[in-house]
Image (cartoon, rainbow, N blue to C red):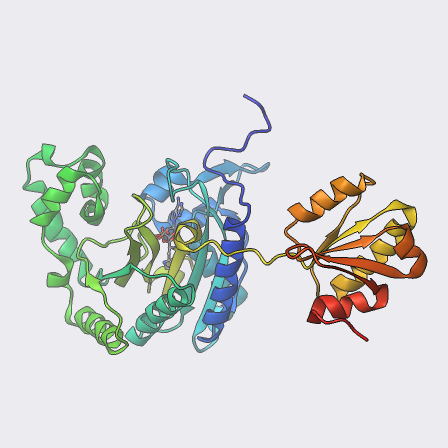
Length: 419
Ligand code: HAM
């Protein structure tokens, strides 16, 4: 194996995908700012304990998927598998958590999970992540979900489905957990897959979202979370639904939606698409009221989501790159000198263009100009440099004019010749 190969599950990104990422980030920044979000950038490397304590020891992410290694002093470090834990640490550590009011934090960047790579599932992938901290109100949940859908509309995405559920709270979930465990224990032990037979004792809720056909069949007869949540959780959830209804957002109740990370309570949600293969979730999130406290910070409630950028990119129309305004063909030494200065002046005036570096033949340079996709070819040969002129050729129509070098900028910007 060559040592210069790319690592499996880690992708290089060229246009149009890299353009799609820029578009998502810029659109996100613009939309989220309308809701009061500010950008937070956190490190990609954190102490492993942060993820163990927040995501949960019993989750697939912590058990099987983290990139963890010791540093030179033997302390365990992990490449972040998601953004929420690091955002919570930064929020608590910066003192933001001690201030009154609601903090709205937006982040984006690479995450790392050692999963089996497939379409829409990478080992290094990218998330756009939003966290709203400091409010336990169902209005915060509904506003965040509305903002997510607003973001998707701004990207002109369609055909997405919003699924929601309530996971209850520390008061009602233990009762549900017991009822579910009793139900699972009453089954033929062979009815569950190997993973679920183990996790039904450690984290029985995860059995609800197992993808194995045998487990899915079993779950059909299982008790449902929404039938056992306490009156406070039920009121919270019905307000969220009322607010979403009021905005005309369609959603489906999904009693199997428990999410793969342990910090959630009350509202959980996912947005799915049927057009991107087996990995259908383009965004997921929910409320996590005890999380900051469990990491040693104050007792601050929160709700958030993350979108998977690779999956969203599969749904975005490839943006057509803006064409270059000019390709400057400079011949001989004087052409190179004048062309270098002129190309710089044009770019500083806002035009986009390239110039040849090589001293190839006129014919080959004209071929390069044609291939560049530029609107105009600008030619600086010995006659033009001697007179301070330049030949301007429209590469689409073939029409050609000789202009003064000092008027070419005006011509490229307006399409008219300066008298
Ligand atoms: P998550 O559901 O694990 O939630 O991930 C959110 C999104 O990241 C998924 O819906 C998916 O689009 C994308 N994603 C996850 N794993 C991969 C992968 N291996 N390859 C490509 N895309 C992937 C979280 O990460 C939570 N931190 C979300 C959150 C924020 N909850 C509250 N605040």
